[in-house]
Length: 275
Image (cartoon, rainbow, N blue to C red):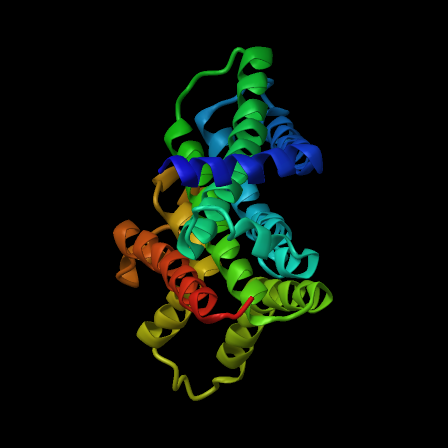
C-alpha cells in the first residue's frame, strides 16, 4: 500500500504541476455555480426543488464533461511513459507492473475526486451561504457527485486500456476522442435511431432497457435521474427506471463492472508487454 500511495502521489503532483486539478475545479465549479444561480433565481434561495433541477442539469453536463476530463488524464498514462522511456526506469525500482497501474489509477481517481468535490461541492456551499438556503434535497446532490466520480473512474480505466493498446501518443489521442464519441454521443444516437425506425415495434421495452443498461453513461443518467422522486419528476422520467426493473444496485453494479473489466484487461496486457 505504501508503494501504491507513492505512485499515486506522483500522479497528483503531476496534475498539480500541469494545472489539471485547478482547471478541472474551475470548470466544474463554474458550471455548478451558474446552474445553482439559475435554479434559485426565481426565489433568491436554494430550495429542494431548485437542487433537484440543478442535479438534473449537472447530471446531463457531467455525462459529457467527466468522461472527457477522465480520458484527458489517462489517455497517455502508459503510452506516454513508454515514449519518454520513463516506464523502463520506473520498473527498475522494487515495484511490480500491477502496482504501477493501480498506483496511477488511484492517483488519477484522487485528482478527479478533488475536482468534483471541490468544484461541485464548493459551488453549492457558496450558494447556500449566499442565499441562506436549507439543506433539503442534498442527498440527491451528494449521490450525483459520488456517481460522477464513479463515471470518471470508468473512463480512466478505459483510457488506460487504450493507452496500453496503442504504440504512439498521437494514436492514443485519436483513440480517446473516438472512445468519448462512441460512449457519449454515437451509442445513444444509434440506439434512438433504431427505436425511431422500428415501426413494427420489434424492439421490446426489456431489450431497449438492456441496451441502455450496457452503456456506463446511460447507467449514470438513469441512476441520477431516477433514484430520487424530486429529481425524477424534474427530469420528467418518474417511474421509468422502476418499471424497467433497473434498481440502483444494478446500475451501480454495471458501472463498477465497467471499471473492473478494462482495468483487469490493462493489467493483463501490461504484464505481457515487452519494454
